[in-house]
View 1 (cartoon, rainbow, N blue to C red):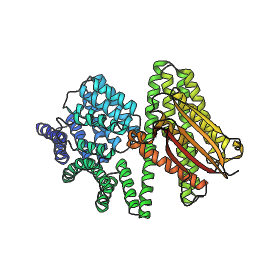
View 2: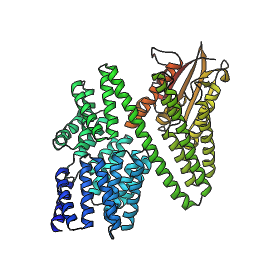
View 3: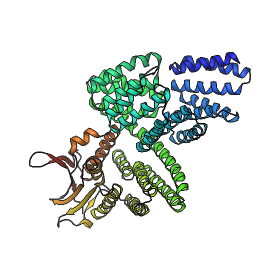
Length: 584
């Protein structure tokens, strides 16, 4: 008994210093002696420690099995609430690493409930931080920040592990938002008392890389890389190599960039860490594009798209899980059973729509040419993607919780009409301009309702245009309007204005989308890293759809974007000009 407990305590000491292999050996010894003496409590505590050591070694499958086994022991024993809550939180972290957001939410939700009932501050803070991290992972940073603030209000001791983890995750959130100074502030708060701050230096290096400060980013990433390589710290090593690959690519050191990118992708694939495989495959695609190796660039870009689709699917499941959980809790308090079932049915309808679109794309892939099929499939996903559906549902939920039932009903009516129109029009290669403008007006009405009339919009066209006689690709104008609203108008002080003008020039229809927002330069400065990628991918997809519709095989471009200047040279907004060939 004594030998087993001594070995277990040694294992946790090694674990706190991030010496995973030494910790695992001690835990194995502890498990051996605990089984000899039939001490289930000691077995469970040692098994969960072994699971954490395996986690630090990126051996996720045996780590999950070990922690689940420990949880079974803890559930059978009395007075082990603290241990059970800790093990559930560790299990949630492991599912998070492997991209299984539903199981991650299930585990951490139980961990939070147990920790709050047990009144243990350490587990309360760490469980709330993990719950916030999951919301940040699925794109709901507002809810994530709410949980971080709850953890902060518990007042964890400075320099303690809960305090350091809280501020590290807050740094990740603010870096993702593009608030780099605030992110660095929280990263620095997480440094004091840290036994091995490689993870913090890695995040700081990534933060500088996101800002385009290549030299400073290199200093941090290059400081992290050798130590992580020496001890085989894969969770740190892989993202450090991806970051260094980006640095080397920007410096045009292609051999070094390829070395880092290939190594990172190999490690990520070996340990099945999808988020690292996603970034590494995109880096390899960018490198091969730069050296004009189109075949390899295409291979890795296809892998990147496939991984992104898989991750988005898991994130959607997590979003629906968290959304349903929140709805259940809030509706029980508000006694709004009818609205609860209405929203539940709406979720089912939304899932049904997505499943229909996915099945339709699979069927088309057998008939259409490869490039055209990929573009159409992704375009239809972009028309009503999981993020848009989730945001709409969240907006409805927000109206309900604030007692704004009329607004909720009005928004729900428009959202239902928009889903119906997208379903109907997804069967067509192109639609009339009249139908396109109907969908666009619905979208703009929803955005003005959602953002409390933060902007006005006007749609105008000259007498030469007959909307019912002109054919256009479905939902082709919405991405440009969304870009103008989110990156131009919502950051503007005062009332915004969006003007859509349509006119005929020869055999083509020209659409100009003008806003009085903050202009391209300021918008680019405040974009987050994720927003930049999403926006760039969306515009690239829209350009390709326009080129195919216009029969522009030379990729000359079917739209342009420029800042609008006043007479004194001041930027007063942005204007996008889209050209669509007339196909009556």
